[in-house]
Length: 213
Length: 213
DNA sequence: TAGATTGTTAATCGATTAACAATC
DNA sequence: TAGATTGTTAATCGATTAACAATC
Image 1: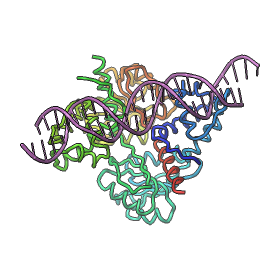
Image 2 (image 1 turned 30 degrees about the horizontal axis):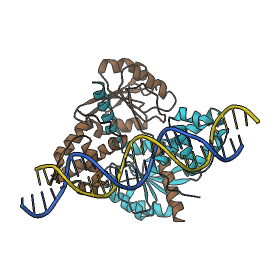
Image 3 (image 1 turned 30 degrees about the vertical axis):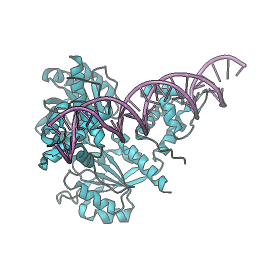
Image 4 (image 1 turned 45 degrees about the vertical axis):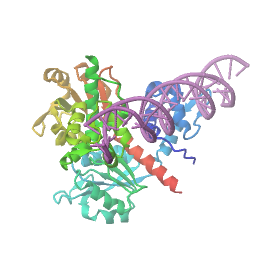
């Protein structure tokens, strides 16, 4: 499969294509042109065609794109045609929210175990999943072929924990701790920083307000 | 204040500057050059100087930047020198997680009220905050000078709810519902889409794996 | 066939990096 | 003063948009 070094800008648009195509599919729309999709999704038709052609020619001249086929193709491109085993570390409010959200499992991401360092949490159950002691996480990762770690612990200790799970063989980290972890080449980290998101909102509200003056 | 139409790329880096400068401050670092900051934060020194100079000349030739002063300036740029009143709508797991996270309040974002449509939730309390009926949200927003709505409800009904709160005078929306809401010009929306984030991780893990072959 | 729409090349626009004079 | 480092201009790089031949 030809990898032409896809830019991050393109990659971040892929899940949006996938979502909008899924909605079209739910509404029994069978075909769509880049122009029509453009009106729904808010990217230019030209950009849509450019984006998709990074991965192959999925359309047909004079017709457009078959919604179902394109949705499936993008799913494959995103790697959603295979299951992932995950562990979640830090069963606080956010960790529980993610554990309880069924949407991820439906997309093939299964949380196999929960971990926490707090003795009061260890042994409790959430959704049939017992909370295990963080101390044993390395052994668990090695023994259960875990691909992804979902890190929901506070800033302090987060880098150290990430060092440990990377050492145990984790390949991808979905990181909610408010740090930019350092990891060896070949380990993928996706950071979700809610504070940064909120501050961006704050900036834009302020800027918007000033423009009005 | 000169607004030179700052690009989104720059804006999204501002919270990172703020965070790293805050950490330097915690570590009693008093001055830093763009080169040193570059090594910590991972942007080029040139980019750092370009970014900052969009907002003013905060440095001093031959010296660098005063950490405390720069941190404060970026805080101002982000609009963190004033308080915001917020309401949170949808007190599920994620909504509770956000309600319980004290970091936002410490930055000046105060959740003044919680709303839910589920009769079982209405009347319950979280952190001294009673959960109110979503039906009365418009009146509440008007009467309490609410700036920001934190939307943590499912996809269905999210656009309708957003229409209502925008009609009631909300100026900024921190949206966790998995839609890209349509809002009138002048209303700021910051979307957090966890599914898109997870799918991006999936793509990058797949790509990384293929490169190794 | 005629009309529509893709895939793809070329043109434009914008963001990042490099370079260096200004100056602390 | 000499050395360091900014602020800013110019050069480069990359991403988006426009255009259109190919073709269904």
